[in-house]
Amino acid sequence: MSDTIPAFSELPLKRQDPPYSAWALYGDDDELGTLNRLTDGVVASAAKEIKSGKRISLDLPLNVQGDIPLFGRHTFSKSLIHKKPRIVNDDVWTFNTQSSSQWDGLRHFAYQNEQKFYNGATLKDIHDDPDGILGIHASSKHGIVGRGILLDYDAWRLENGVAHNPFQTSSIKLEHLKAVAESQGTEIRFGDVLIVRSGYTKAYYNTPYEELKKFSEVSPPHLAGVEQSEEVLEWIWNNFSAVAGDHPTFECWPTQREWAMHEIFLAGWGMPIGEMFDLEELARHCHQSGRWSFFLSSKPCNVPGGVASPPNVVAIF
Image: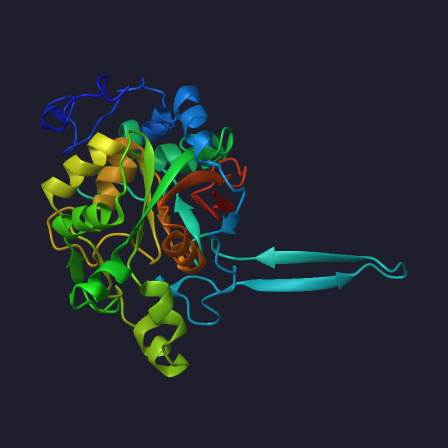
């Protein structure tokens, strides 16, 4: 499969298309993008990662940000309903799908200059078809299932004296991510789901409420994340089916380039971006077991036309 994708240097596939895009690689009507790399054979091979049966959830609580969600998003609310006169309960949840652990779907972020989503869809196309084109239901059909790898950047940078503040705009360099993989002895295979632990979740839980409140009022928020560079784009294009991390943007934010990786991953390649994954227990187990790869099973919610979804994701060793 890795031999059949175009070289990064061949992107965009059509001269008139946006930078680095791979539109129509899997057909003009494709809605899965790089998830097409998760073939039956790739998933069957990934299942060999299951040795002990240890299972670790990577979902944060849906109310993790309390009353101070970033980007001005809605807070989570839950109504418990006693179905009188019976001794029966229902509940109703109301939440923004991007206020806790999430997969960004292909309706989320367009090429901003071109105003086009994956495979050339427009904002009008999406709003005229609220339950259809590029909705999260497409990735829900088969799930995001395969081999996951954790690159524990936070642990590596502490061991190597690399300064890092999750709440300041700065870049996690590609050379450092490669150094993490080498230090862990982690083999990267085509179609893997890349997961980067930056240390954001740990820092978030250790930061006083008043400081988090001030942080949430900054728009856009300043976040350390994976660097925006052609080298990073090529590395991810050549290897992965999806990317994820433990903080709200995966990439450094605001972007330090004239483009954002959100544009290229989501609108250019149809590559889901996982954000705010809970990687703390996963990291502990990886360190204890000496294993940084695992079987990853994620089932986005089957919401026709959904923009994003809680990942409902489990790592299995």
